[in-house]
Length: 387
Image (cartoon, rainbow, N blue to C red):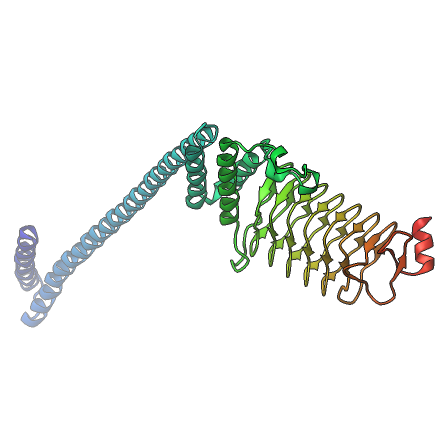
């Protein structure tokens, strides 16, 4: 600020000197010049000096402004670089936190799986709950935890209560003895079944994930998937005790109960099967209810043996229905909802002493055996099926 004052004073002084000198020179060397002309010319010369100073100030101000803008641009660039570095640092910190969390989850998962082999049943139950809690906090572990729980249920489990009553001796004293270890293991397996159901999404969840279950050769008790969304189920050669509840469940993948034994009833009312349902070779000792179920894929009931009634009342079957070699000893209700699907019949027998209802156009052909009949659709179709 001091330099600007000094420059201004010097410029004014120089302008006065120029004014006086020019005016005096004109009066001294040009006799034709009047005093007013000399003063005017001197004023113009002095004004030129002042104008030159103003131009110099404007140029200096412009250069200062350019430098300021350059510094501001550099400052903004440094701020952007600092912000980018901060974001990178935060991303690295988040990645490190995620890795620590994943490592802790992996360690927790490995420890829980290791505890599933513990001899104490309470430890195994605690390990299962730890796995379920891990899946709840980390949804990406859900399928893995379900696979582990299903794998536990697939372990060999020869419990006398899974033996059909008709195969046991009439004398209860000769029945196999149930050890306390088997009973404790039975309760542990019930915990695994409950946790599997809890981990599966409910049918009222928007856009649920379809998880798969592999229960091949498992021994299950009160198996319950009601109101749950499931992907594929592989339950080959399983043994089911008490009621198997599939009411209002939604299955997005194929469901396989091939060669399984159901010692209790099957409930699958209002259940939706988007893919194939395979019941081939199934043996049931209780009633089977598929009332109002919806089958969008093929229904394979080949070679099933049902000692109690089987009910397909008002069920919708959009694909084929294979009933070849099926024996419904306790009766059957095949009153499917229209339109009826394509049906495969051959050696399909039904017990008529309790209930035997078939759609219109079908017939029950009595057999020599008492209270037994064979299901036929039309003679021509029946002959074709035999051929």
